[in-house]
Structure formats: structure tokens, C-alpha cells
Amino acid sequence: MDLQTLTFIIVGITFAVYVGIAFWARAGSTHEFYVAGGGVHPVANGMATAADWMSAASFLSMAGLIAFYGYGGSVFLMGWTGGYVLLAMLLAPYLRKYGKFTVPEFIGDRYYSKAARIVAVVCLIVASVTYVIGQMKGVGVAFSRFLEVDYGTGLVVGMSIVFVYAVMGGMKGITYTQIAQYCVLIFAYTIPAIFISLQLTGNPIPQLGLGSTLTGSDTYLLDKLDLIVTDLGFDQYTTSARLSTVNTFAYTLSLMIGTAGLPHVIIRFFTVKKVSDARKSAFWALVFIVILYSTAPAVAAMARLNLHQTISPEAGQQLAYEDRPSWFKKWEKTGLLEFKDKNDDGLITYTADPAENEMVKVDRDIMVLANPEIAQLPNWVIALVAAGGLAAALSTAAGLLLAIASAISHDLLKGVLLPNISEKQELNASRIAMAGAIAVAGYLGFNPPDFAAGTVALAFGLAASSIFPALMMGIFSKRINREGAIAGMLTGLVITLLYVFQHKGIMFVASTSFLGDMPANWFFGIEPNAFGVIGAVANFAVAFAVSAVTKAPPQDVQDMVEEIRMPDHAGAPVEIEQSLDH
Image (cartoon, rainbow, N blue to C red; front, side):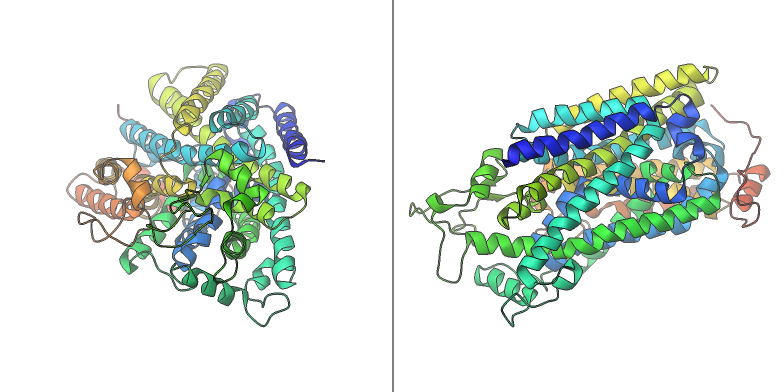
């Protein structure tokens, strides 16, 4: 069976499963729509959390970045994994103990202010919409190649699927859909890795294959890769550091605290019955995440090796353009791989020298999808990878869209503007908000500003600079008041956005990410994608400064902060009586 037909069948089956689950688990109340009824098993919730967290950036883009930047691309691996640990240790159990639906609701209650709640809604929407754009890039890349449709058509089809199972099922439908999507994406990621590791090293475990010798040779895989890329003028794969030390630190920390402040992941810990289940969910989610993240460096190195050995054979040899393999021709049709014969010799010159390099475009996001084709794996494996990439993008997109919809319907409409609407009216408003969020996300996805992981890094920076400090101070400091929290969130968000857009907008970020040359106006050499950590520092500083010169929070709020951190009565949410300002 040809690849396109097989891909249609496998992707079609997975989509049918997602839609079927949505109808089976459709939400009948706001409690089911927002938090799946609060009764999800910790193991199931851990799997859904992993799928929610491992987006197109994790599945498609992370390994592609590591493949091309080597050691320098490890900031994504370290930042996202470390951030999940921060979330599981410092935020999730305490927020679950408080027992409210959303992050803005917690911020509104903790800082006894509707204004704080509205500011949190704005921060959430800005970060989440930016994040969704990255998922749309992943959907477009996957569809454009394997279903042989254009990028725009892929977006429309993908968003239609999300619309059905997210709007119908809410968090309940999304949770069980994400469990299925995790199974699809993890098999799609690991099975090709096992095949290719066996092919290159004879070792079926990719993590071990990365440090093994090549089949029939005494040369280690990484040594061979270092030799190939340096012969072509690129930096050594295992030691290249395209970011300065300060930039690397800032980028990693921005991703870490941005991860810990992501509302669509935090809300997952409200879907279990009690705090102990939230901790168990965090453990299981980390187990499920590690399977993919520990495999990514092997996938990256093997993909880079296969790419160069195919396009640039042994020293002194060049591949004739007319003899390019079928995978090369198919990816050329997508516009994500492009060759330009600069010297009219009909041979492909792939080198680090921009003046001589004829591979003028090799999109980083294609590496995971193209690798099985380059390695000439069976068609069913290649089709499975397509289904996995789509599952990763759609699972995270659904979680983000739900976070946006709940912020609009529950926090803004029910919490501030129309507090007396019925549960049915709120549920209908949630579905309308979800449909609107899907439409906006689809529109923005037609012109993604960066590769998937780069766009996602911007989203993490926005969450790091605005939401994470407010949550941390809300849990661990009794002295931070509403004036300080509001001033801090606005300061962090505004200076981060200004820093990004002062460099001629988001498109400038795409052209400067990971470049060695530092523009003169970069603050301490920190690029815009990594500036969230500076925004977070400003957020903390302003919040503490303003709180120090204004009135302390009411005593009942201070008591609530103490109670949240108390280990006893862990299963019971805190109930407080307080009046909110207008």
C-alpha cells in the first residue's frame, strides 16, 4: 500500500477515535467542562497531562533544533523538563488544595480583587494564544507533507477536529482524548527511533544507541557526526554553543518558570479528587514525559547523521540534484526544503558557508517527520509518525483553547461581568468562547512567526514574566497585596512584549534566534525569546516594592495563604469569605 493511502487510513482512524471519545465523554455541566468532574484517576491524568504538555514543539521541533544546534539546542530539553519539576513541586499541590477551577480565579481570590483577576485573564490569553500559534505550525507541517495538502488546508482540517472534541467534551472530552493522543504520539516517536537505532548501531534502545559505535565500525555515532559536520564547516555537534553563557542561562530559566506558569497544564491538577492524587498525577506525568524527552537527543543526532550522509556522501563526493531521493522531492513540494543551484553544476553543495551553500532552506521542524523516510523505514512507520505529530499538536492546542475559553467565560463573564448567569448559560458561553478561540488560533496559524519551538519559547517567556511570579508570591508570601500583584503582572508582561516588538516585531525574533552575533541593543546579550526571565525579575521586584508601601492584605487572606501550605486536611479545599473590589 502506498504511503499516502496508508497515512490517510492511520490518521483517519486516530481522528475517528478522538471524535468518538468526545461524544462519549461530552460535558453536561460546567464542572465537567472545566475540570472533567474532578474524578480522573491519577495515572490517566498523568498521561493526559503529558500529552497536554508535550506539544508540537516537543514532538516535532525540539529534536529538530537539537539536530542542527547540537549541544546548543539542549536549552529546550533542560528548560521544559526542569520547568515541569518546578510546577509539580512548587505550584500544583497548593493550587489543587485551594480547589478552584482556574488560575485567574485563584489570583482573584488570593489578591481579593476583580482587577487582579482581569489582569490574570489578559496575561493568560496573551501567553496561550502565542503558544497556540506554535501548535498550528506543527499541524501545518505534518499535513502539508503526509496528506499532500497545502499548509492552510491542513490548519482548517486540524482545527475542525479540535472544534468537535473540545467544544463538545470540554475538559472531560479533552482528558480522555489526550490519553489516546499520548498513546499515539509516544508510539509514533519511539518506534522509528528504535528502528533507526538498530539500523545505525545495532542497539534497539535509542538512548544507548546514541553512545554506541556504528554497525560494522569502531567509530562512535557522535564521533562520526562531529567529523561530518566539521568537514562541512559547521560547528562540532557535541560542543557547539550558539548562545552565550548568559543567554543560555536566561533561555533555560525562562523556559523553566514559563512551564511552571502555564495555565493549561496547571488546570490539569484540578481534574483529580484530592491533593495526594495531584502529586501522584505529577509523578506519572513525569514518567510519561521522560520516555519522549530521553529519546529526543538520540532522534536528533541520528536524524542529522542520516540527513548529511544522504545529501553529502563521503568526503569529496556530492549528490547530483537529478539523483536526489524521493523523500527529498516530496519535501520540496511543501516549501520546507529548498535547493538552489548557485554554480549551475547540477550537484548539491551543503556547507556552512552561506555563499556556497545550496541547501538554502532546511526547516528544522521537518527533521522528526522526514527522518523515517530518509532512513527508508516501512511506510506504516512513516504514517505513524504523521499521526503522532498531529496528536502532539492537537492535544496541546485543545488544552490551550480550553484555558482561553474558561478564562473568558468563567473568569471574565461569570466572575466579573455577569455573575448571576445560570450554569447552563455559562456552559453555552464556554462553548462559544471555545469556538471563537479556535477561529482566532486558526487565523493566526496561517502566518506563524517562527519555527514551532521558537514561537512556543515566546509564549513561555510571557507566562514566566506575568503568571508565574503572581502564583509563587500568592502561595509563599502573605505580604504581597492586590496593588503589588497587579503592578507586578502588568510590569512583567509589558516590558517583555516591548522588548520583543522593539526588535522590529516577532519576525525579528525568528531571524535572530540562536545566532552567534548579538545585536547591539540586546539587554545583557539576552535574546527576545529568553527575555521572560527578566520580565519575571521585574514582576517580583515591583510587586514587593509596591506591597511594601501599601496596606497589607486582610487577615483572612493571610490565614488562607497559611492554610494552603498546611500539610494536614490536604484533601479539603479552602473556603474563604471575602469581598472583591470592582
